[in-house]
Length: 186
Image (cartoon, rainbow, N blue to C red; front, side):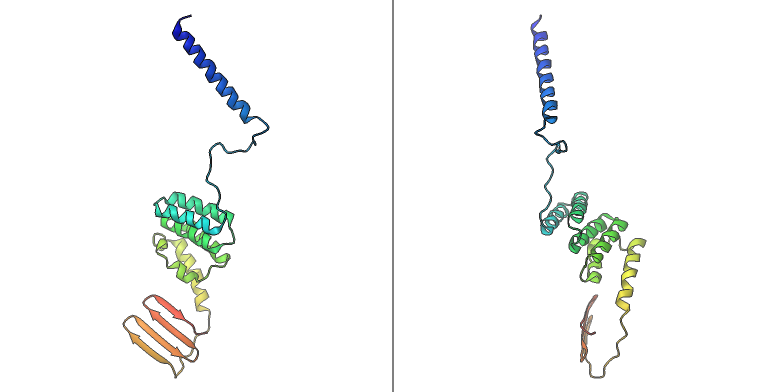
């Protein structure tokens, strides 16, 4: 047999042996049947770790990866409103109004504090004009308006300068600076 044919036969034999060894090791009782082929990123142990991973992907401008990590975090920590809010913001940045609104609703359902302020985040700018997002804003607006109207007390102190207004009376304080409002009155 020529030398090149002998080399090709040995090379083919080694390839067959390696393939058979790989198949046999995959079927051995020592390796679990559902072991992943590729090494995957480990799941976050805390909500904070999950949020850091999402924020890192956002910082790298990899919004698709950020959205995937946020969805994983939502499934892993379903009672954490901050994770749902972060997922809503990522989906908003991607322009996915429906997904953003759904994640925001999950954040509300799990106890999101100050939802009106959260809706003002710049991450929602790409979806703010969409019908789905306007509907979410409309659903939240009645919650603010359902309180009884306040009568203006006569002993109120009022200061106004430009876009800043401060009113103090016996019922509490009202401070408005541009779009930001702090109202401690009942």
